[in-house]
Image 1 (cartoon, helix red, strand yellow):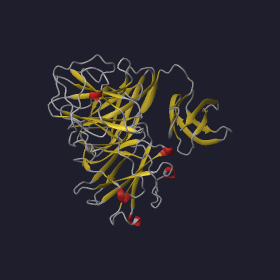
Image 2: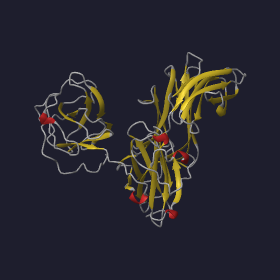
Image 3: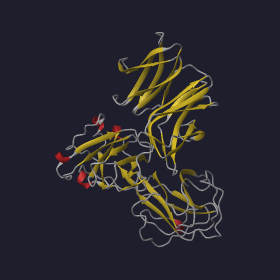
Image 4: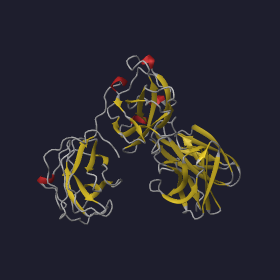
Length: 480
């Protein structure tokens, strides 16, 4: 369940939701409030494209945003009805879906944040799901995303509760933020800090917890980073700040967002100051949470690899420790977005020794395939590995660069006809080699990853020198 501040506010006078797709004066919602919404039993579901599921009935409201940045929409209901909603632009005869939320069950908030433009009309379709036809009472909250803290003062940091399993999520944005110049940032990527400003959060370490996890998620495509400090003497004197760590891409949600695991044995009662910023001037909305587990993290992954050969893909991973682990699920995707489970293996359960696991995808799709492994513990909670790529039965030996445009990492796929080292060079428009790295391996299709943090935005080319000495011109890509 996601808790968002302000959604339990006293309801405004009730608006009238339309039984049919329409933008009437009576069913216009005002941004900034949480009016009551009901769906009578005699409302019927309309045939609308891109459904969130199979609704029993629906109702329609519409709104015009107050912000050219983003708007947050939430549907709050009682504990007896399962609901969902969709957001559209365009006329009822030609709708374009902007968002869909049907992630939870009875009594939960369905919420999403979307980019909006002043002057555009947005239509919201509220639906009852499953066995439920009518909604006797609910609140449809449409609110502007919280404004950015336009200051560089950690003493004005946004409070971030530390809870079990990240069940309190704060909405944040670095739009219009500025940089805290008085506090040095010792992170390896600190040179990026300043191009877009930073945003500060604070969290108090609970007593009796030996670790705290700070995790983030992008509301839209975003490349974020964060650093964390302790300050036993308070925030007013910056010389008290003790650097604890920083991260770039280790969020459990992926999407090039940061996540950090902190040992807090000696920090009980201390305030953590969390500094968030984005690369290359990116200003966007995001979410952040602070949590602890009832025990320590269930699994410590130390390796994860995939390799295609002879028409199959071998997925292998290793763990250094396991606590309360029940099983592993191997998941596969063709687009790195929608994953499906393709296999399951039992986990060690309780172990402080290394365990090695292997699963064979005997019938992989042809071409570029994404894999990840999900660990599931005995109480049903889970964690994911990062995603990696295999190339199964690739019809062409031509080099492949992806994604394009690229942010801070570029994947390079190519074919080597013999074992041995390969050199991958990234060159500028003058042919100068700005990044050179060596990759060793066996013959066949290979995949390598090139770190692009050192490059400024622009167009670059890739040159691959094979073990035989042959040089492949892999083409070019755009660095954002």
